[in-house]
Amino acid sequence: MSPSFALPDTASLNDLRTYLGRAARVEDGSVRLIAGAGVLAVYTAVLYPAGLLDEVPTVLGLRTFELTEAVSFDAVVPIESFAERLRIVAERLDDSAGDDSAGDDSVGDDIDGHGDDGDDGDDEDAHTADDDLPEDPATPAHGIVIELPLQVNTVTWAAISPPRGGWVPLPDLDVTVLRDQARVGIAEVAETVPTASGDAVVRRVRSEVWGRPIAQSEHVPAGAAFAAESLGFLRDGDRVRLFETGPWSRLTTTRGHVLVKRRAWSLSR
View (cartoon, rainbow, N blue to C red):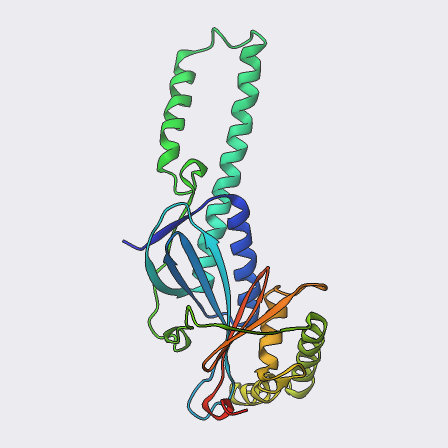
């Protein structure tokens, strides 16, 4: 049986769906899900090297979500399959809300004196339907339960685990500079990559553009700005905190985190 987890409400479900939708537009591959201590960490890949000679840095997005129950797993699943599963759960919740609204109308009739002597069979059917609700994986009373799709085991970037501790704070980054850097890079990639280019050409251009250091910090690549902007982590006026430990850097806003592992050649400053 596949692992499952439970989100506390529809706001969390919608937030997760939005995050995955943005991630899929950047890299429609897989997502890594790590659950523990009542929290679900959702890692998505924005940039990662395709081989030893690929100089692009590893850039990951991270969002965390509160869970209603403490479960523990570390799984990698296809974004498309996971997003589709979340869509189905959201639709079932919408249908359930609609059914509840219809039930409320009938209760209103009873209060007005039109349903007290109704058919006993109808009452029995309604009771049976209510009894079945806890078995629905999308029952809000038990949290919104989501079962994972089949896992995949061939995702290279998922084997790279950012450290959980030891992060040293550095001076904050300017959100305006990051957003400008991302937009300039996106435009440069679009202009440089010829139409119908092969994967090797696209990767070379992306490596050159997104591997450059940002203006504010020579050891943070422009790909970090691209990730933060593409995943919806940046808004004008936001504080962007920067942390570092070993070869890793982390950009943190109120909306999420971007984790960067520098290539060996870039470790010296």
